[in-house]
Length: 313
Ligand SMILES: Nc1nc2c(ncn2[C@@H]2O[C@H](COP(=O)(O)OP(=O)(O)OP(=O)(O)O)[C@@H](O)[C@H]2O)c(=O)[nH]1
Ligand SMILES: [Mg+2]
Ligand SMILES: [Zn+2]
Image (cartoon, rainbow, N blue to C red; front, side, top):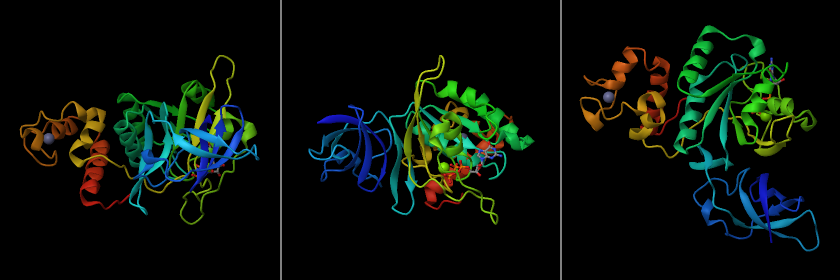
């Protein structure tokens, strides 16, 4: 038996980097992974597993058990109506967005930030394609995330601008990149480690959206460089819509740092829905500009969607 790190895989076959330095392609033995019951997929990049090496084939083995996860980043897989494991045991979630091509979608970022917070995972925002220019609305939202305590970086995977800053942000950590298709997640990995030469895609001419080039999550090592420790980075497939999972509507405000401290102080106490009530501290904070209107709007939409189970963007 040997321990290892799951790099990626599909269905029941996973690539595991075993602690003897050998990568093995491993199916999962029977139903050994009870920890993964109720998830759309049994394992994610970043999982630690025990592998029974194949006696005859050095490149193969079988996953026989899963080590307890420190954390798991999930989203709701709407097709299966189950949480889908995107990455496990990560130190930082990096939400990648763009000022344009595809258009800036701050609500996507807000959703991923909420999910990270619910799992106790620190999060950062990376605006890629900074070379395209940053409009006032994007700048304002970036500044708001900074104000809320998130690390925010502006980078360009194609020119290399800002990539050193990203390299120091992730040094010594295990991170996952999430974002819509076409924002440049794989391009960022290529900028961090040129020899990877991951496939990158173009945008569809008709819709200006990404074309879902990366089809499965994979963990890559980014070696130490200068004073900076090595890191591991999970590239993930872009999704059109990020649907949080496992957050009750009434708890959602706790995952918005600018709202968390106000919950419960409204005149109607814990029963306040923060939508119309007089003496609502959250609405007062919105009117006073302490809570950005668009963040309130993100919160209101997500809350309504959790309640109705129908997701719009
Ligand atoms: N202008 C500009 N284009 C970029 C930059 N980074 C990536 N691109 C382009 O954006 C397109 C999409 O890049 P990908 O790296 O494939 O995007 P992705 O997020 O991995 O997309 P999926 O795998 O579909 O989720 C490609 O045509 C890249 O060349 C950048 O910094 N500036
Ligand atoms: Mg990609
Ligand atoms: Zn209220």
